Image (cartoon, rainbow, N blue to C red; front, side, top):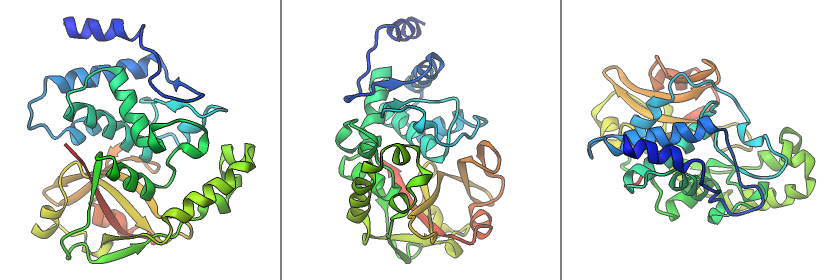
Length: 286
């Protein structure tokens, strides 16, 4: 009780930990939600699977796209009321990092979110945000936040050679790029730094309910669905959940319009999307 009271009082005194021009954009309910979840995590046993523990707290939250694009200037957006696949993964990852490192304050959460969402944990403008998930994996692996699983072979029997250019080729699809055409060359340069990189992944035909896959993928691993849509690397994100009938995806679903644990297996889910080619597996580090 004393800890909960302290967290509530602290909300009125905390200043933004984000460096840069925009500060933090959030509602009071967001900070209360984060502090409540961190407080609950504080009392969990050490064996708790924190990625799943946190991800399941958001089941039922409405799916809303582009929640990071609400401001004219770049700010750290915290929105626990509306999630898309990327913001679900980032929210859960930031909470998990706090729990693993025994950091349980609002400021700790903001620091974790900035560190994974922005290059060098520095908010400058729209181009300082990490936009492609391949770059997100690479930079957060270098920072010791996550690691990408690419072995054994099988099941990691396919290779993705990244070729991204969608943002610079479709600037009209992005609010910030429409407003600031001078950002487009910066985005194009960033795309070129990750184009050509190669990563092992599990082809979608191999996403079966067998011992090999159960050993390779843990509950709570981040699943990044690879695709063959021109200019893109990753089509969708979620968390791995093993059930008796196989691997399922806990995700912010555009189809269901909310965060759900998909009733169909991931194998079935992948077969319904012709542009999906398989899955890359990312694990949050303790």
